[in-house]
Length: 67
Image (tube, rainbow, N blue to C red; front, side, top):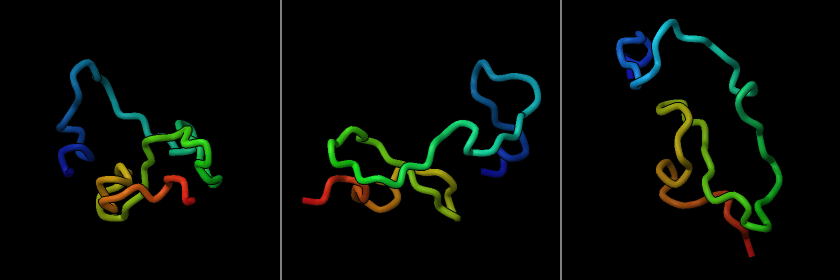
């Protein structure tokens, strides 16, 4: 993780300086239920790991439809 923040680790094709952005500039917070199962992948914010797939963090889908 430290390599990412120190800019020592870069993905292929990405060059130049890093640009800091607010998360709200590239995403929307969703607070409504997923009644139509429109969304299959949900992310959560973890203090330890940052933004991570909900399934990986909780070992289950929290945002799925409750019947």
